Structure formats: structure tokens, C-alpha cells
Image (tube, rainbow, N blue to C red; front, side, top):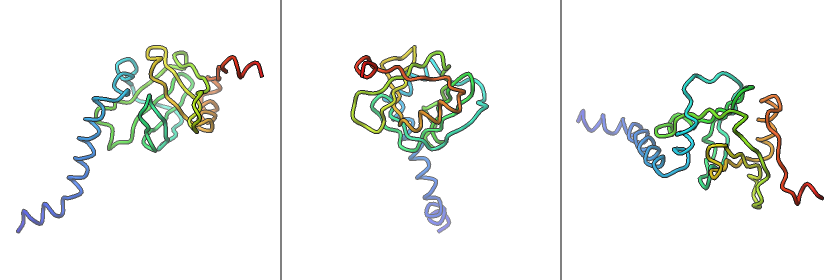
Length: 151
């Protein structure tokens, strides 16, 4: 009886364990792991935060699970606590980020590319980009494609 009560009362524990396991297994196949090889955060982040944001990292959409930190020297990316296993926080220096407009028709039209992994784009909305730009002290600017510059 006591064991049944414990198992029934602890169903929330199984849900949490499920999130952790799925998060770790998904990290084996997503682009976050590649970014983490070069940009893993090794110190505590200090700066402004934008929590529960949405971004597309390569082809994987992170809906409301990304926390973004901004200070004058770098961009900090992390996932929410339950999905953190296999997804260490990232620190990317502003000097290693280039910004362009994505040519795809999508609300995620701003593309951030890192110097060490240019084939792994991080796509965000223009409004989120403007918030990041303002909080960073204007560290980022968009490089327009030639056909947009000439119009």
C-alpha cells in the first residue's frame, strides 16, 4: 500500500525524469552540442536577461525554451532548467557573431552566425534582435545582402 501511494504521489517525478532523459538524448543529435564544443560558458553570467525566448538553431526550433543573456562583451545562451542536460550554457563574444537577414520567408528573419560554426545559424525575430542590440550597447549590426543594399 505504501509503495503504491509513493508511486502514485511521485508521478510528477517520472515526468521530470522523462524531460531530463529526452533532453539529453536530443542533445546527441542537435546543433547545440557543436556550438558547445567552442563556446561553453565557464563562468557565471552577469548582465541583462531575456528569458523564455524562441529561436531556431540550425533546423531545431526552441519555442520559449531559450534564455538569452546580454552584456557589453558577449551573448549568453542557455536552455530552461528542465532541458539543460546535454545543453550547457554558451558564451559567444560579440566579435565572433555576424548578423544578416535570412532570405527565407519566416518571422525568424535575423540570422546570427558564429565565426567557429558559420554553418549553424541562430535565427531570431527582428524584434528580439532589436532588444539584444539595444541591451548590448549596439554591439551588433545587420549586414544586408547586396540586392537589399542596392534598392
